[in-house]
Length: 362
Image (cartoon, rainbow, N blue to C red; front, side, top):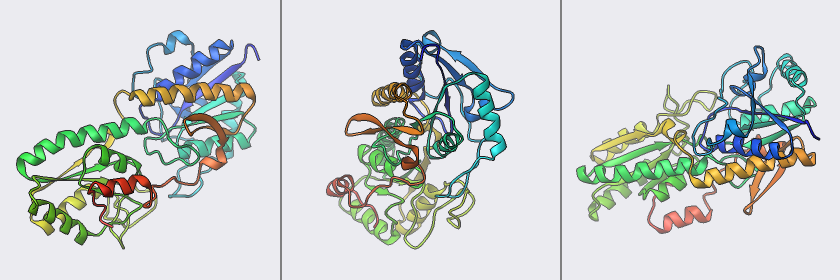
């Protein structure tokens, strides 16, 4: 397979570790004598006007420690076909045909797509159209099925923990309740791990609908026992028992395409009203996506990039690189998309959190 050419792109939201994957794929491919073409702005780079550049070891040298992606990414454009939660997104055939023509015109023998659930669904559709695709799982939410961890997750958790560390000091100075809203969509991995690492008193997850009466009782009891502050970490997809997701334009009337957000302020306002305690809300938002990747994400990203090239070398296509039991492998993309990996309320992690006094409001 000398003179073989590989395409690579990053699609969907950015996260720390993307550049580590790109760098590893390029280095690994170059050792085999292969060329690598990087498409700009995700799948959109394959559409007219085609946007790409040749990648070699010199062009990717030193990028591993940098956040974001040197190729750029987007979740908008002609190649995006978002649906409601849990529904399959399909790209119009004429768009698929245009992208396939680009790959053929550039003599690209295989394509590495780095993305989350939606991006990998598109990769699966490309595979169904005959493209030799290898997917690499990317999401800070850690909600992809068939892999124990995705790069970017550890960096996001580190951001939450560091924010909590800072907020503890100001909250104690003013004897406040502090509510921290974090990302994660419909899964509570970031909130759970970030909350435990950040010393949260209360963690609210999408998988465990909460009760305001229980939260009020827990907060009042903590202050009665001498606590100087209470730290609440809430996942953006958390919701009140009997209620629904809170979106940016309503207090939870839809599970459709509207963006999750606002639960932090909603919880803070309700807790302030119920407890009479001074309460402040902080939304971390895109801080969790930015910045340099942690060492774990640099290593995991590197391993994923190498594994993607290995899949191509061994002829494994229509698959996604996965990480299980400390080993990289691969699974069919169909096993990885369309099914969220959620936090189990009966998991050891939740049990450990409860054992150290963390309240989930359930």
